[in-house]
Length: 150
Length: 235
Image (cartoon, rainbow over all chains, first blue to last red; front, side, top):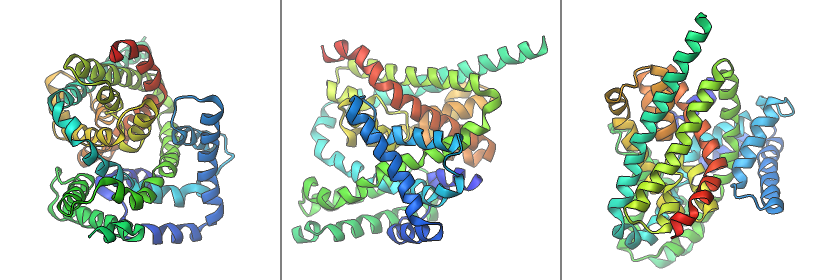
């Protein structure tokens, strides 16, 4: 269980991207590669289908993610069936969005014109989120505790 | 040099090698600001600019790496499931505070950016700035933002939150460790989570709950929050 968690902390324990495609194949072979890939891509495909049919403004991958968590919860998918591929994909996640990051070079002019509004909005909002989320949770915990004491 | 980047395999290998070096660099130096994504992006952009290669050429090869983002987001369903199992007992305070964090995060960034005169493309791109990059990119694409701008802002927010998050919360009287970790996961995604992991694994686990829940909530709610605000944003 903690393996999955620690893989998620990208800076600390991310798996090496250098062998990404090789590891992908090795990981697959370790535990029934077809089943693992089928579950992940099956969830994704259902997500795509739902987006197509309902034109809901959600990314198909998010629907796939929630579907996968739900299938694990109700036990239709066993954790061991997806552990290998999920550890690999989650561990290598930071690498997958390097191309998207490089895409920023096409927007340099646009960013330069509103650099300060972008920075102020992003950082200002982050401070607001940190403080409100923290306050709300602290408040609710206190409420919970006093309720328990009564 | 153009031929070099016209070959998809070479572009993929190039990107992998750069990322590998960037990751090694951070492990060796331990400097937080040398985020591997940030470093690889800077190196690749400099490289492309020096040899005068446009993004479209690079993207012909790099789109195959991009492609794996979607299945990787699906794979996040596994940690989501594991975390939800973990927080069963105190699920309500956590969900409510995450919900507040999600809504406040989207609304505040949109309002500040709009008030400072940012164009609507930029406002939409900033909306998912608190959540982990893969989800933020997907949300940005779904609401009509500029995905690369979102990716860049997400990383900047993450570094800011990880470096200053705990100090800011102490300053404003958020003292409970669980509340702190949940908030930092909510606001500063994986970078905030890894900072919390440095403090203790318990902080890290709580932060990752914030990271995952806010990712899901933002993906679900941001399009609708933006829909409500859109007459004002587009005006």
